[in-house]
Image (cartoon, rainbow, N blue to C red; front, top):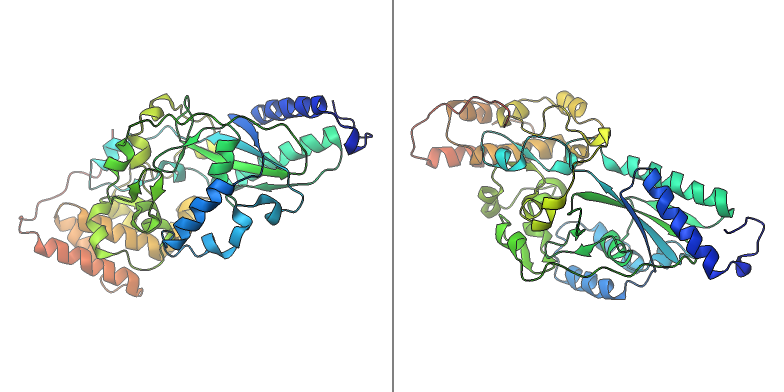
Length: 375
């Protein structure tokens, strides 16, 4: 094992191989499901990133281009970086069946990753503990911890670290665990041995492409964020394009369709992490009840949640779209009319659109099904 009193030049390959094995074991002890190690050569991913940006497929996510090539060149983001330790943490919670919620337009669908507490702090804290465990073994060394918190190409790095392959929907897939997991990284100057990337097993399957409600997966491994429901309901700050609103259905925060249909997710296991358990009934909530939340209620019930990212105004915008897509019903009309004079122009515009859809619907008004949770 590497000794703290040894000069770095005297560390042998065998020393670093043993350290790498220990790092993986320590990661599992901290609750990660998998840990791998990659080098920093992201030249292939960089070409794809630059092409994606050139086509403006990042939409209004200006931060994707802000940091230049530091996103694809780890040593430019953190000087001295030689390796990236990548960790996987499964998040799929025990919750109302996603397909059941999507099939009931009176309910709101929240992406499964956002049902519990925000994952960023949890992953960063665990990675920090892992980094400190390494330091206790080898002495001071260079490192920096990330969890979706800096310009990092985490999926290409995780693929190089052997944690899976990038699927046609651009999510990372593990052959025996599916894709319901978060990623985190430790950039380090330790010359650890690297993994052999796993083979891509998507084959001829195009289920994710065919299921996408808005056609956002424009080609295999090519996602146009401007059409992606996750982008439209979370990242986009302004109006949702009108032609896409009917396609959003009852998805009020994110979208999981491409993961729900992926055949590899039949192997996914539900998480044992208490922080990822569904909270406040958001796994199968009634749209009308969510739309009635005051800003104070929104802030209280989404405390520590990724849902906060969309903001209260964006939350009401998303719900207005979902209510516009719901069956024509007196309660829906009343809920929308109650927000028709909302102080926010963004909210008013989407409420107006939703009411116009219901006026255009010639079907007679009929009470919606009882707003009960999905089975």
